[in-house]
Length: 554
View 1 (cartoon, rainbow, N blue to C red):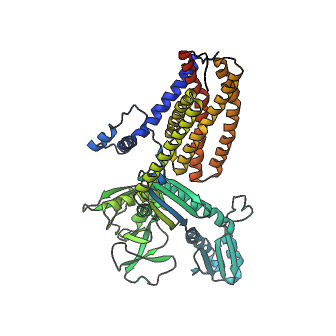
View 2 (cartoon, rainbow, N blue to C red):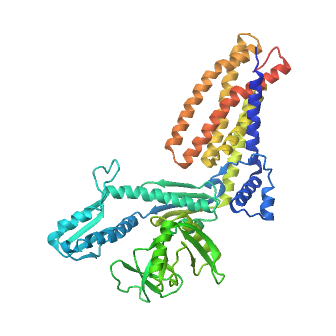
View 3 (cartoon, rainbow, N blue to C red):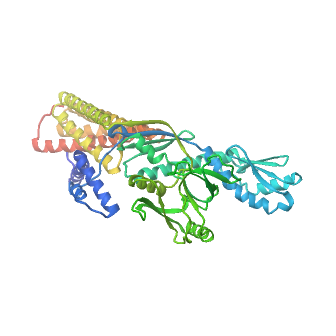
């Protein structure tokens, strides 16, 4: 007897209606997108304007508002491939090690003699001692700063490579430590880039590692590659350093541990500062754009308790002395300390407009990049190119959809119409699931959907051919339809499981575009099996119960 239990009918119809509800926002893409942006802005800032309220009210809040995110190739945006200069971190590690080593060796001055740092290439620290006969003792002290490398490939090695000759000790990171540092630097860079991109509210960026030291950044919806570079290409390394002197010579002779840096807004002015900072930007907890006492753009910042304590102690001991606020090797301000600053907050002002102040606040909140980014490739994808891709994908889907429907109707008559309806439901469910999970649709993803259209009718073809075979045994139309679905099920499930396994492998091993193809293909497989085995069967049952035919043509 050809029948489906009532609860199954309700469940199938309910899933289809839910799919329609969740897919529907994509038909009103711009309106729903403006609604979502307005709601997010109001929740984030707590400020409402007539424009925001109009955008928020443009889509009912009780309806689903999930959208299929459009990727870079469909929406337009910016593409950057950056190389992280990991060697800068080696130099930073050696520079930060020197003050500690100097203190430890100075405590043994009676044994090792006078100590001084001598010039060496970046990433290498060379120290001369006054008593070469005690070189072994000095090396022993230095070795105390070397730690075991806790990785599988670096097991048994230490973090510092130390060599000694004459009265000179040469120190640099060991190969195992360099490998660990490189990996950590790339991961840190990825996280900071992601924070900076998220801060400006862009949607679904692709930020991923490529190779040993490269980072791929694709941000849909952003105006240009230059705009993206201005956001993420700045190191934003902020430090607060003691000022030794001021002058106009960029090549002035300075002592060990001191550097000459230019003023950011005063041409020809150079500051000699202590290279070791009092406080760094890593100890900032917040930074907000504001105005200074003259009403000019500025940035307010606040330190964490550790930074506030160090800043307070330094300013208390150096009232009347200038200190430098250094951003990316430029002195943006060098105020004189009038009184101890123990509140842990301060202000950066200078020659900047409001947009630059806002960008600086974003950069400081997100943190400094551990090393500079060298951009190897940059490309701006215009929105018109993305629209062309959308139109081409839409045409391809429509042509494929129409061709499949014509073929099915010509081949199977009324049952072909049932398959066409199920195909439409299948597309609705695909977009509903993509909207629910917040997936990003790219051109390869559209290819996966078009492929799904072709595969979706395969299951129907198997069912209809089985029904034809059963009709030849003259068991009656109801029994033939029932046996057709039962006997085709195992073949349908087996064929789609193997394809699903391949899609899973593509997702795990593939990169961005391949993953997008795998996601849409996987969703399409699941929905096509559901629509072929349950939706078309339910439609057939409804038709059969109403028509009660004695003979059917498939």
